[in-house]
Length: 263
Image 1 (cartoon, rainbow, N blue to C red):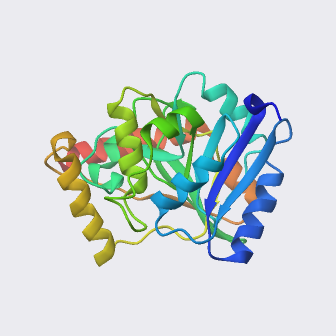
Image 2: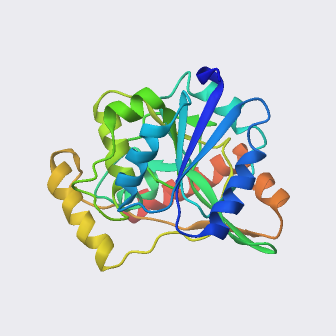
């Protein structure tokens, strides 16, 4: 293989049906690139699994993503090759300001991206913020989908010692990438459906405390207001139509205006 045109997709999954579905989805995402799916089915944590998958990767570009997503973008490979010219780590949601492990706690004024969730005939598109197709200057990203070059991922690595469970791996990896001088970005050209958004529970809070102990010097002292911006749609085509940038930008401006008034 010409590794410059191979994309490695690393997925931690203990559910054979989910892994089969996401693998079939990726088979449609790279019409102009070879790709490999590296499944880690016995990960001790997401960090450990991603490090192990990264060691096996042959591609120049690596994707780290959940097993319960469906990507709607037709040519993910071409999108990533283009956008990784002006960004180093790309995701679909994140923030330019960080208050804790939960990137959304930093406030709607600093958030970017959009993600769909749900099932057929009952989808919901959640907008976090939109200004341009590729928003750079992010400090942290959501780990539902992360893409970067293999060399960067190997240099930064996933901290399996501190984050030895299923939370914190993403915010830690992307914040350390930002602190190392890499360009962290959110792409609105990467449209996906996420079946099961994360919930805050006692385990999540335990890793948030670890995150704060590790990165406290780089965190802002206060949370900021958050507003839910959501649209119900029925079909995948309606999800794609909802990613209309002028509409998303106008909604973003209004949400941030309300946040400023509330504060």
